[in-house]
Length: 570
Image (cartoon, rainbow, N blue to C red):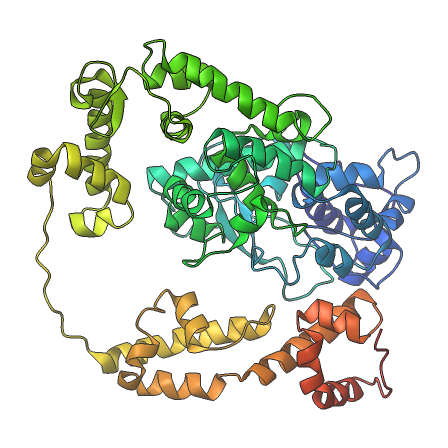
């Protein structure tokens, strides 16, 4: 290359390469790949680009860039790999430097993960304007491309999808941010409670991106979390964890809607990613989920990596010693005449944690037990704490009703059970005066009209499912993507056109696995990687025992592709 664009602040490397392609003067896109990497055998990847050593070798004379500089400053590696062991991180770095891109995604579990990565490049309208004013052109910001981040941390406004697919279309083409592909067609507005949580995530994600933290083994994070779980009353010294209570409080803290948005919902039954994270296991999950637990446990991200929580003793008794001293300090304070809130401030814990610990230790304080609290010589409802909380909860109740003017109080309380229960218990008269009841009218649905309107939407969803990373085509997945999974399959007899089309597209498990295998073959070919049973199984996310069932179809597909041999089963 005779030149190379200077990467802008927070610019993803993909965007810098796109700006090179725009200025190169090459007529054919593939010639840009020859300029950049010295080969045509690679693809444009956003999150974890590969062949960076070749890119450095092709840089203009006297260039000071290194592969490590790009990896840490202009890719999503610092975020995606923040919570994995050093050995695996180094393997990913090696892959990014020398090729075979699918390996990086497999090492992070992103190929078979339950988390679906963003489909479109995202942008912040304010950043877009500022970039043009400051640099004369817009660009893709890496902090905006993180799956699970919905707002710009700088401007505190929602991010928008561009019209450019991250994975799709011509994979040997880098596409810049432009006025044509970054259009705000409809303004996005999030409720204040969701916006608050989204800003937390955007800020914490930027900390991971912009700090080169030392890689840690899984036990480091387990021990860090354990200290806080014990402190907050969710765990005991014998490693017992109150999983049910932890899950309930975690859901109450974030809310079902937000957890669903960040693809981190928890199952109704036991288990799930949260349970896995706090138990002794080596399973790595998506970085967003570590940040969710970190924020819930009130651990600053920098402290999570750089400060060993508890005491500095190297032996395993450090946490036990910390708990013992913490308990002793609580016993002393509980006899001092201080209020719950004052003790919580001294011990840097929540009032809920203090109450649980008092019950656990069987402390007999000077407090009178009433109204759910512990106060000296007076009722909970006579305290200043109660009055402050009542005003706060009244205000929140009214804000929710203003935010959702078309919803009844019954509908609003479904996602705010804690708020409603408190007001019902302590402020029932006021609640009754501010309880909205909306008379529901039964609307006659024109099912024929709905059927005609729904059919093209269903076809578009199925088309997208076939063109992107395979998902099994079922009534449930189609309904979920349209946001109507609650009634679509139940009302299918009233939707003859839609029903006929969906049933013609429904896949058996074997058909779905075959489609995943065909997709995996194309992915491996684009990466220039050997076609083996192991590689197919890893890339497709199909377990070997299922592959045996469709072994004949796999062989036929390989022969159609020109692989007329018995492939390696290693």
